[in-house]
Image (cartoon, rainbow, N blue to C red; front, side):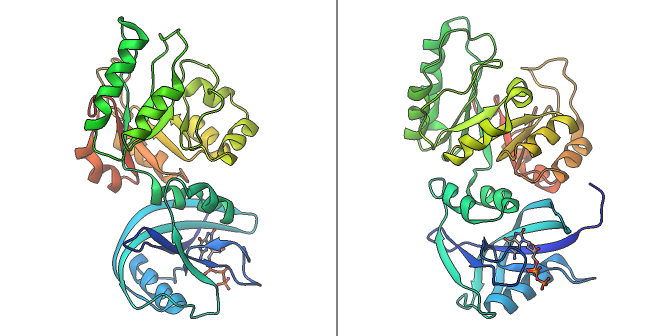
Length: 325
Ligand SMILES: Nc1nc2c([nH]c(=O)n2[C@H]2C[C@H](O)[C@@H](COP(=O)(O)OP(=O)(O)OP(=O)(O)O)O2)c(=O)[nH]1
């Protein structure tokens, strides 16, 4: 993990209508024929933003005016070790054109187009594509209480319309929920409110079958350890987003092996729902985030006000029960 890496700066150019620009990698280049974001190698001594401006000028003839760093990920190819640094570019001058003969196109990228984008791009780009479509906030439901599943479902459904959309909503009944959960109805309610549902059955119970591909699937600790690579790939191939709960290096390594789409990293601080579990703190969080090739959501005693701090530590978003419920 500490090997020398070549920095690659990438421009994720988003038009006001949501379309994003990509190019086809030219013949003779690494990853020829695959769709990729414009960009290239940072030169020695060059600042990242200067490298981005130079590459986008040379490659597609635009001058960057507004860019925000959205994700940084390490990726190892057999013959090269890269650090891919993705900047979302939302304002530029000049019309993107192919300065080097490569095919260029701007196409819609949203939750529904995500699976087609992933299929057309190198596996390294999964984290970049996800960083362009995922919301920054992830609301986890409180667990099923003593009044049972029906009351829990009613409580969840009544809160959904007032959550600022769009948000990821992790439907987590908790390990005490023994009854069968009404997953399709819950997921439909989340979708209808404009959010992105992620189902999280109790314990090591399997994911429900036959869900709408717009519904994400969560690997809690038990499933992260027991689920096969094949089962995860199969669900991702059907379009489902897969998230995972990471607590340390070992669970991060497993999440990387499974190529999940996002992770929560917890506990950052001690919380009311997990009393006694001491928090890992910001330094440990930053260490895990730096090694993660996917968007990282901080969880445990943090809320939306902590987002700037999370970004400074290499995280992408915030997950919480109490901040949203
Ligand atoms: N431009 C670009 N490169 C990507 C993406 N995803 C990804 O893994 N890469 C890899 C491919 C290359 O190994 C590296 C980009 O380097 P580059 O385009 O400057 O260099 P290259 O190897 O194509 O060309 P050269 O300078 O060696 O002739 O990053 C992506 O979306 N866009």
